[in-house]
Amino acid sequence: MNVLLADDERLERIFLRRILDQYSGSYRVVAEAANGRQALDQAVLQKPDIAILDINMPEVNGLEAGRRLKSMNPDIIVVLNSAYAEFQFAQKALEYRLDAYLVKPSTERDIMATLESLTRPCTETRNRSPEVRGLAGETRRDAAFPHATLEALLQGMARKDLGAVTAAARRLESELAERSDDPVFRLFAINLVFSVDRTLQTGGVPGELLRLLDSGAALQTLGDTGTDGDMRGAVSEYLSRLILLLEGLLHTGRTRDQILHSMTAYVDANFHKDIHLEDLANLVFLSQGYASRLFHSGTGMTLARYVHQKRAALARDLLSNSDLTIKEISHQCGYRSISHFYRTFESVTGHNPGSYRREEL
Image 1 (tube, rainbow, N blue to C red):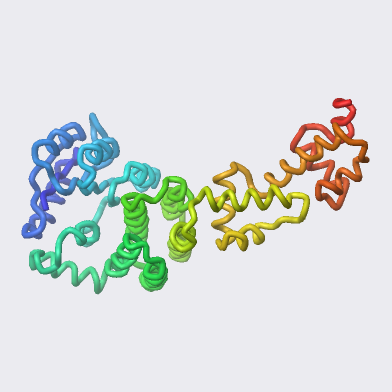
Image 2 (cartoon, rainbow, N blue to C red):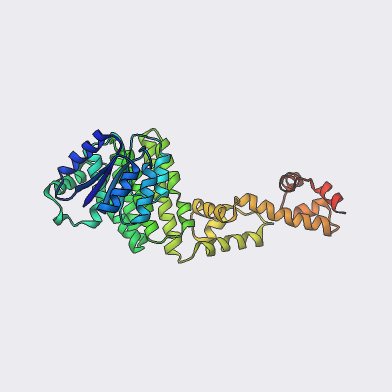
């Protein structure tokens, strides 16, 4: 595969070229660039399969160059290579649909394992050079990133096979947990998020569901966590959200809007009763966490806030158009305590019930 290297540091380009030259049967450096503008020009001329871009380059930075390369050729593999550990760069790279993230100083193992995970679907093992076949074996034995299990996960996602995705996700959790003390665990976990998000986007998953998965938040968590246990927890939570998203998308056969309508219709009909998140989750056969995120994403409110808004609307109508006492209105709106009714009504309307009624009369 043809590779473009872009970095304003000449020594970094030499370092990367020397590594790739050892795997010349599979990777060939066809162009180098010292800034983002040169990288874009060389991409037009050389049409590389892979671009490895430093972020902090003059004229056009690596993020913007990567975004433009993807707009020119969606199939190009773009890997960001940065000396900065701030993970907002990784989040922006995800937004631009770039493919992977390396943090300098990267080792040969880091670089080649990352390229191997990205190019494996494009090249059968029997067609790889002996050097890369050897690296693949070494990666499977020693690297913290279990490529074969990730492939099973991604293939299950492409086939919309929930059972395969669930099984592969649980294996990934187990395999990564066993190797979470590996120095490159964080890097591999970040690129797991990139791989999943890229597969979902190319598979046409609606944007609102991708927002519920919130890969950007997962990257932020991975960037912020300090201990092995925290990182394992972040990976586990992300994979659990992935399974729940696919359950909602595939297993039930319902769209996001249909699920949201079922929940809001239930609340609209029952807001005067005690409603719990568990009730909504059971109604639509989703986990409480997933149902909560979906409800908040669709309505802009938590369940509690939504219920208070509905009750306040009914209370305003009854205060203006009935002779019911405030205690009776409180009861009809679903409040067991009149003091609770006063507090919530005022928090929604800015008035207490008594003053609201006087102003309306």
